[in-house]
Length: 569
Image (cartoon, rainbow, N blue to C red; front, side, top):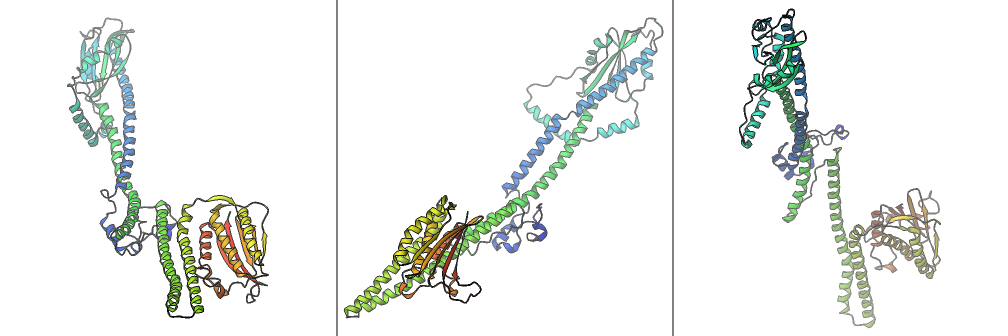
């Protein structure tokens, strides 16, 4: 199998042929390569999709050919053409008889008075297979002959048109066999050709030319024409001609054979192209399905599954390429989530061990101390650690449910400024009670965004309460909002101590906290991590920076901290 799925030329192409876009061996697991080796390129038995593609293509082709054969008027055209030619030949023969009539003497075709019918017929040069009948006014046949002349050019053309018709003969034989099973009564044989031609004589003896298709005794289609022999405008007899038996059937059968031969060629081409098309669809889909089934079977047997490797078909410029990219993205996101959960569990265990170790040490020391003041101090430590554990467990529980809630809850449109005004009113009072100036700067026009109002409110509560916790009496907090072309910026600034430079890249990590010693244990370090998760789930961004007296001097002491949230509108 060719490793062309990642070539640059194929990336820009629009046509996918054969197995060119099947994932290379390097992107699939060993088990999948074994299954692929067992599966042939054109597998009909193991691929229902391949069978459906071939079946539907054949149905369309069969309907098309059946319609062509049913609606084809080539046979009618041949009949009209041959009938016109036969009428002309019949009239020429009649003109030969009329040319032998002299004067107005009575003519009797039956007795040969005035015209020698047999001699005239013998002098005619008729093409092979044509039959001529001469009748008198009493409808008695007075002469008959059959053409034997062979025109080499016409004969070659005729033989070419009536060559071997294997497919048509086979289908006709099959149809006759099937029809004979359901036939109720035997078919009656057709009357003799002379009797059928006799039906044309009344009109011919009345002075008109008549042409009609009749059946000969052998069952082949025959065209017959009859025209009068006139003497001074009065019919004295009639000439009838019949085309070679089965000539029309042979020509029509030859045309039908050519249509069926084209059908057989188109059938083979259609099946071949269907197999190629199916291989570009069914085989890659089988690879994707088998890769997913391998992961499912491993998990169901509680084996070590390793990493599920979805075949890389992302270079395909079609829906299968999109499906491969989507599945690989889903698997990657799943593994990232699993790794995140593992890291989260490790962080939780580490964070819980600290207060537990403190509790264990305090309880062990409490048994040995005798002084009341020392016991009260140890009890205060135990109480602080219990509150710390309770806060930590609550925050961990909220953080673990956040992903599911962000997916389940329905987003709604709401006015961002109304939500911020409510928060500013409540949190502003808390800040002012601690001697902190609380300043807001909001635009006058509403700003409507789509999202989870309660969760976004949680973000701004975390940012503002963090700013309050780092500010002292006389500091200030400013909350302001600005609207841009396709986004809105919400900024929370304070005049606190700022953020250490080495902490700017860590403050949004879980369980990270950079606080004074007097606030030790009062925060779990999950607030900013949860805020970042909520903002990114809404398609926004959040970052932190220090406020400096001049941007040119990054070494100057910060005047405070600034948190910026950008949300799409």
